[in-house]
Image: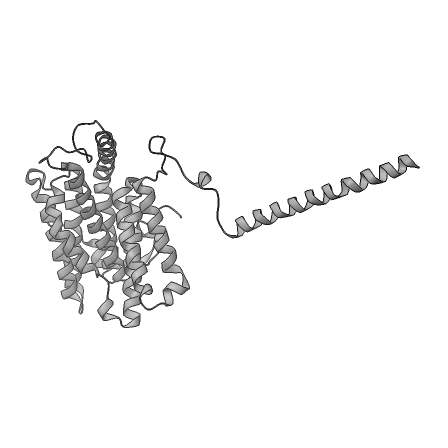
Length: 339
């Protein structure tokens, strides 16, 4: 009897421990669930740490893409799309953010140009639909004129092959639009103006390397004469207004021509950034940005040139969309990944 009594007392003493263990388990489960529902996670799990500074590291390209994606999500969000100011501000901000991606991410130059043009077009359409003339975002002509003003400085940094390819693409587009203008009963004046801007761009590019001027002035017009109103884009099989196909092909030509410079500039920029970081450390000679006092900054010049080249290609893609080219990201430019 004493043994049974002792066993019962021992068992009763053990039960509270089990209950406490179960309570602790429940509390831990609830805490874990609350953490998941709150969307929070351990900082250690989501940050890459700089071994020298002990701070999280995110490359300029990663930061630019993250910003652009954020603005894209806000643009598509029904709440932002219905808000009076945000419905125009968010796509305009997305266009600027993707422009920054084109500068910071050489591998995504074509995609960024495309998405920037799409975002500009979204802002433009929303402004037109809402009659918000005072808040009208930049139109294709404004972007083109800005790029034209900056193009001579950017062209000085391009190689002969890049200049020749870009000048030929612009010259061909200008010729094509002038041919189409002559076939139109209405809208010809607008096409002539756009064609003149293409020829102005071709002139700026060719002037940077007069010995290698590739412009032919006259190109084959067979397809244009057969399809003056609409045609099939040979790059993707889409049917679109002929002038919009001309613009989109010019944008593709510029992206292909500039890709080599984009890659080289990005590589040199990263190397300069590494050197600048080393010189900015205590005891290192020179300035924190890698320059000596009074010296020119080639990295800054390259960045400005990248911005101009991206803006010119974006302006042509934006013009194509404004002229009725289908706003399909995967088909807009050949360089765009399916994402």
